[in-house]
Image (cartoon, rainbow, N blue to C red):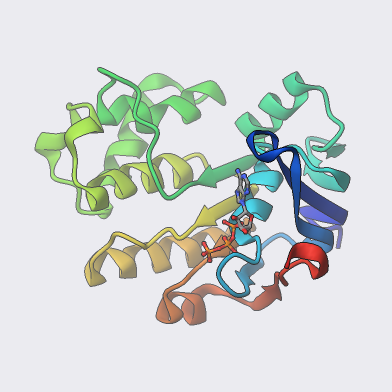
Amino acid sequence: MMPAIRTEGLSKAFTLHLQGGTRIPVLGGVDLAVHPGECVALWGPSGAGKSTLMRCLYGNYGAGAGRIMLRHGAGEIDLVSADPRDVIAARRETLGYVSQFLRVIPRVATRDIVAEPMIARGVPREEALARGTALLHRLNLPERLHGLPPATFSGGEQQRVNLARGFAPGYPVLLLDEPTASLDAANRAVVMALINEAKAAGTAIIGIFHDAEVREAVADRLFEVLPHQDAA
Ligand SMILES: Nc1ncnc2c1ncn2[C@@H]1O[C@H](COP(=O)(O)OP(=O)(O)OP(=O)(O)O)[C@@H](O)[C@H]1O
């Protein structure tokens, strides 16, 4: 079976322009392949480059070298070299990302923040709102908060809004950056169930899970991200 997402020789270095152009190599030749229905946990010491890899996979960071091949529509696209419009289309249709922190859009109500990616994929508005609301309930977000913008929500409430927004559309590939970091035990259990349901539906998942219980419950294998040889 063809992977849902794979990298070939993916490398990334940061250049610190304010520090005389100091170059910090982080990722050196990463080859990762994740198949539909599989969950891979990125693994490695603090500072090894796990978050950097996630951000490269989503296209937030440009890669220095290599390819990120995403199965998208009838074919594959290379997110490293793709036209920005194609990256946006891939994010809309194929590639979801639940970051640790919600990027709050001022004055937009929680239920609309959750429904928006579904509406962008063509789900009728009423259906998107209903699906989003059901997921917010499942994540124990009180109904009184659904009509409010999440700017003033607690960290755990914001994380649950982010999770509902990321899980509701049913993307073929989902990136999860510490999806349970701010959650209590009951909501952690809901997230573990959501991940396992997404896998059963064929979603390929790449995650950073610092919580060992969560990692063991959802990950099929670990992918080691090593500190770059030249990074010292
Ligand atoms: N925007 C940036 N500019 C410069 N250096 C960066 C940037 N982002 C990350 N780095 C550096 O890249 C390295 C990897 O960072 P990254 O956050 O990817 O590690 P990590 O494995 O996710 O760590 P942790 O487990 O502590 O979250 C670190 O040395 C970090 O300082």
